[in-house]
Image 1: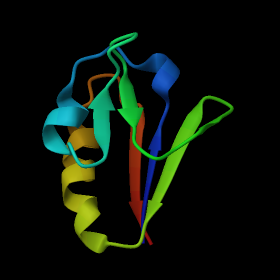
Image 2: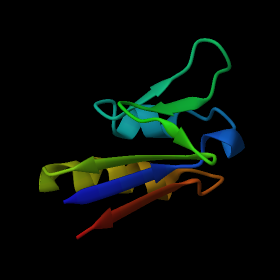
Image 3: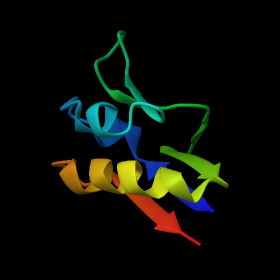
Image 4: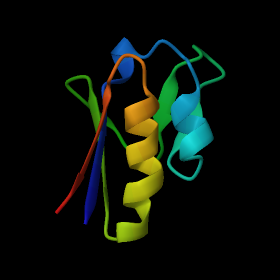
Length: 76
């Protein structure tokens, strides 16, 4: 199980997440910030749980590339 969390409010719109993990992240055309697909806002955090362990590598690369460190990826 891979758990991805995004603090969208702090996003600066650099686009690294969408480049490294396009299956999970997109850039909003409305405000230019990152969107973690298939999630809802819960107190400023967007969380996605994925049973596929192959999601870890691209999402981890996206998290490490993020200049404001607002993406967290855990494998449990």
